[in-house]
Length: 322
View 1 (cartoon, helix red, strand yellow):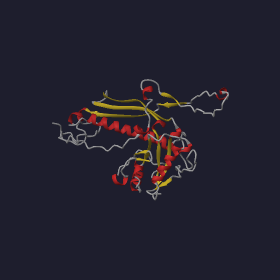
View 2 (spheres, rainbow, N blue to C red; view 1 turned 60 degrees about the vertical axis):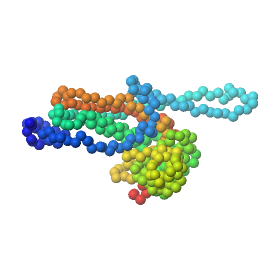
View 3 (cartoon, helix red, strand yellow; view 1 turned 120 degrees about the horizontal axis):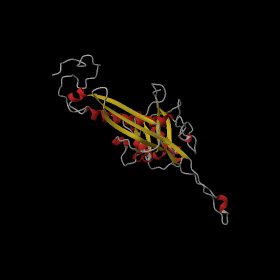
View 4 (cartoon, helix red, strand yellow; view 1 turned 120 degrees about the vertical axis):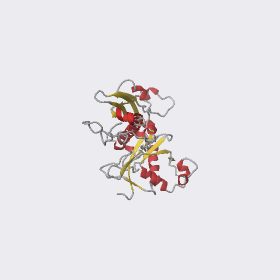
């Protein structure tokens, strides 16, 4: 039997965490406390159709965009050679230049003394953590939009390609949202896409948790706003409002120095955002320098707005918290 000591049980060794609580084996519950992972939305708001083109080769995808076709009025006897159009389309590069990694070590002693499969538990936890980090990175890319990928008509204080008077807020000048105007805000986002001729089907919106509360506290008496026959006030379910499927995400980060009350709200259709993961790999190997099993994982990905007119961004704040 091993000597009952705290910390490491052999002299001269470096401190290591006691995953079993103590060196002397005990019987522990096989139930691992369930971890509440942050919800991820990337799979619902982005297109992954390009993954197959780079999974086995290359570090970028050349995406061809649709050309703009000009239609001319017809007159009897007109010379069609005067209106010949040779369509050409621009290309967009989807670079696979982002990534995440984890590297964990399980000592042989701890593995033997544990009554649960630690490596399997760690692998599942690490995979979820990696997925969350990818979600945060993509949402932050859209929220900050430092490269101007989102159409200027779909953001800012004078949004709207036709109207030019829709307030989507801006950095330092957020649109104030409360339970009385939150639905009007969502309707304005819908108008932004309407003026860009974006299809009504497949629209999504990603909102922070506090906006979810304001929506449920609003006077949604018109059940048709929810896209079904039951008022949100009665069933408490956040579903579809004005053609948008709403997603709550805690991965939307506040904008500016902490503490900050400014948050991004993102909206659009999935065809506007391309996402591709080239490599997602988890492996276990033996350490050459210690009696450890190493668990490590790697993922690399790329993301790019490929249709700037079909995605929008608002900067908002909760009224009364400034």
